[in-house]
Image (cartoon, rainbow, N blue to C red; front, side):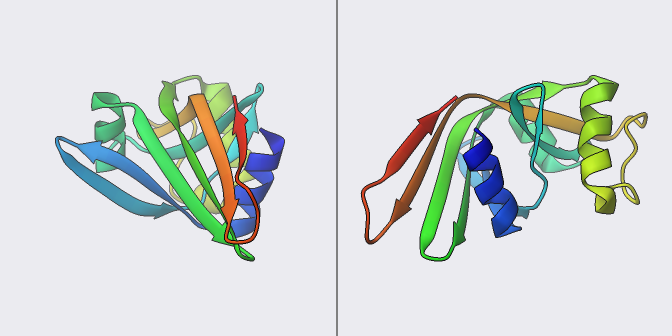
Length: 130
């Protein structure tokens, strides 16, 4: 999981896909964190992303750097604990101007049943599950 986190962090931006009804939805994200041995993302409860993940937790993210791309698929499970939100915000200070771990908007999700696949045009795919 650490390798997956580090690659996503190095990319800076990744694209998160969710589902709304029968329509895929894709948007750029930048938050990634490991807390209590789980890989987390963060969003706001007022955003469509939150509503889509509550309706269907299956999601996939993709990012690309130096000729290698990563696809991470799994279920995103909400974690309402203040400690999980605080850890995310402490490690992502740019989010502090928009979110607070004690507000009713900030929410973090962790990956469950995740499969990460590193791919390139020059080597065999590498798969990590967690």
